[in-house]
Image 1: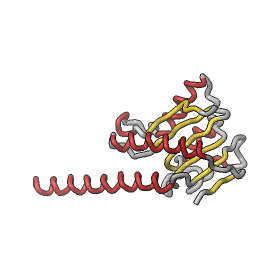
Image 2 (image 1 turned 120 degrees about the vertical axis):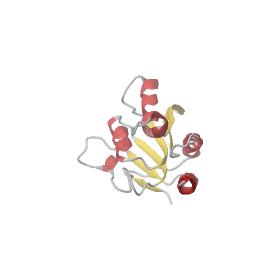
Image 3 (image 1 turned 180 degrees about the horizontal axis):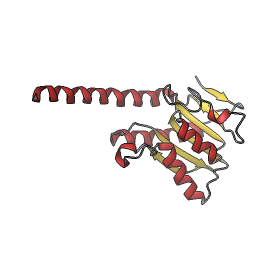
Length: 174
């Protein structure tokens, strides 16, 4: 199911192309042992920023895929304003990342699967739709949802299994 907030936006083959790039980033994070979230920022038909979660590697709670992609995009445009850009992200942005997108004036966010625990644009909050703020963004959800959700499920299943193995090893040592 695809839901669009604000105004109706038809999904295109280009949307799918860019979401597949975000999924490629998420898979890179998965291989590195990071929560598999990937993001790309598109401007005028090309990627100007990309990233995947790096919170563990950098020991930085703000090293989310969206933050890394937004920072790279701002450097590419030599401007903090990302007007005319679209952020594609595999999982619904958290409130921090939604706030960064709002502050950088990104007009559109496309994401794959919801985040019921930290979702900042649909699930828990609707930061980009708050009429009290002086900027908003269009939200399109549900693009390649199953692929993004399956990657997250696989990651957390493996993490639970690894944790269980670690606990069993500790019990054997005692």
